[in-house]
Image (cartoon, rainbow, N blue to C red):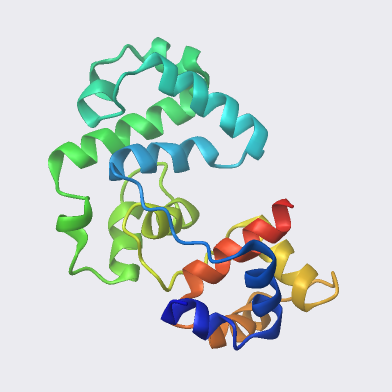
Length: 194
């Protein structure tokens, strides 16, 4: 059993989730830009809708790279299901990736907050998207994305008997998960989606 799972098992709720779902790991994307595009697609829509849009976008493009996105006709991106606003956001991200190294190497020495600030300079990238990028593109282990509705509802369901909890209360609950709050979040999502 990994150190992360040992730490999380000290929380009785997470221990039960680990026993139910087994040892899951953070699946870090091979291509950080592609993962950022997935997070942009996922913004503010249901999981089912996001999956359908993602499927159409990925069918349309062989590789999701900054160059491919910038070379594509805006209508092509929009027709793939991104819509006008998300097409703009994806293109903004592509330009930013072309201008500076926002991949693992370029952000290796940046703190989580510095990464959030750096990505937040890109129009269309907010804190939620940046936190998803920290977890799924950069593989950061101690990210708690309380901007995610499923995480909040999952914590309320598991720790508050479904009663509404404040974000400070949720942070206090998650404090014992440090330095593996990202992995704990995966278990919260898994439980919420099941």
